[in-house]
Image 1 (cartoon, rainbow, N blue to C red):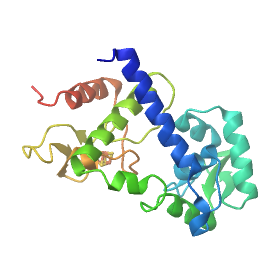
Image 2 (image 1 turned 180 degrees about the horizontal axis):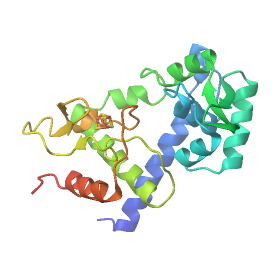
Image 3 (image 1 turned 30 degrees about the vertical axis):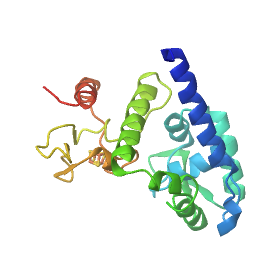
Length: 214
Ligand code: SF4
């Protein structure tokens, strides 16, 4: 039996391999141009933010340095996928948003038939739910360690009520939608997300981790 160190090594190798698969895939098949992973992350982060985000917000959200975000944004602007407009809240600042062709590109990148989508689609709902659970917890850990902020996950949301539903197949509740849902419907990036206080978040994480809450 492997020790915990080895298990983490294996998990890291698995993540690296999946990342390599994602990079190696041919985006050209459907006419989508090849994108550096950092640029891809930016396009996806800007998707759904019609009013745009400041480059500092993008850097924090993605857990990367401001200069690296600026470089990638310049490239995306030059390609016509990203535009900058004056920030209505601060005349000295800029907001970055997707152009119409940038939005088209984002839709292609999010196509479930592209990239790792087919591999995820092959997972039964239960396993997909477990995967999304792990993502929620890892993103929470990244946030706690100061590696990222402004994430819009269910676990960090004031509307999230883990294990508050009496339906074992849909054990969580979204107070915004007023509906129960299961692990496979956990949102990693939800436009309706409302951040909650650290105290409430710690309780939600504890309850989320407990498969059978007290
Ligand atoms: S509002 Fe969005 S992020 Fe919040 S609990 Fe509902 S689905 Fe999840």
